[in-house]
Image 1 (spheres, helix red, strand yellow):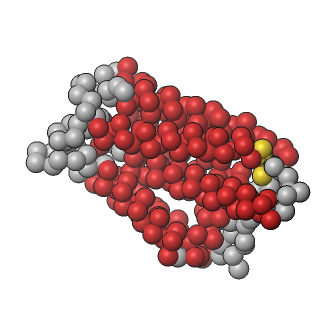
Image 2 (cartoon, rainbow, N blue to C red):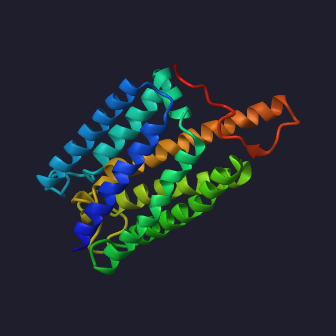
Image 3 (cartoon, rainbow, N blue to C red):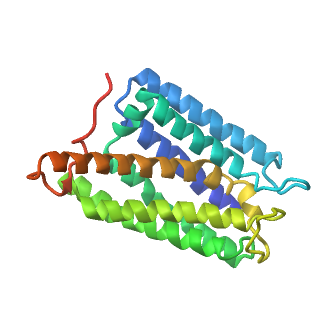
Length: 251
């Protein structure tokens, strides 16, 4: 039953996050449809591989297989960010309220705690990923409300939340890898390990959602850095983060 609920919730989260990020980006309608098609194809491929057991622990495989799509998305996203200006500008054009708002769904990290309670995920991975996501998601809610109300947010508050949210994801991925069954670098050996993260619907978290959230943390950090540079040039600038102050719309 938990897997069914998880599939419905995670499916809705994936769809909502893509709709918000792509839908609010300042790009042409054609580019949006292309982006939706690419993202939908990636999700469908992940589901097909996971349904066939492609992410389950296998004899002779010395690393957690869900890390493969994670690395593909992270490395691919960073390369595109560096080498493809239109991709970078599209991400930077997404309104701040959208970039922060998609993280509110991370309160669904409660699923990690429930899986641990059912004996399907081990500590410390389950506790760290669960509570870390809950804190990041809960922290995003007042920020979104503040941005929607006043159009700005205190830069220091946004910086702290962004750092904590990114650190949570990095820690969760690291603990998940160090708890994976059958790997030579496994440090945390408490049963049942992290095998559940290679099954549907939970594989969608490391293979899609975590890279997506990490990329948005990067975008927010870049915009904060741009604001700091502007303040150095103009000492009279406010310490509040004007969300569209460093955004260039794409024709």
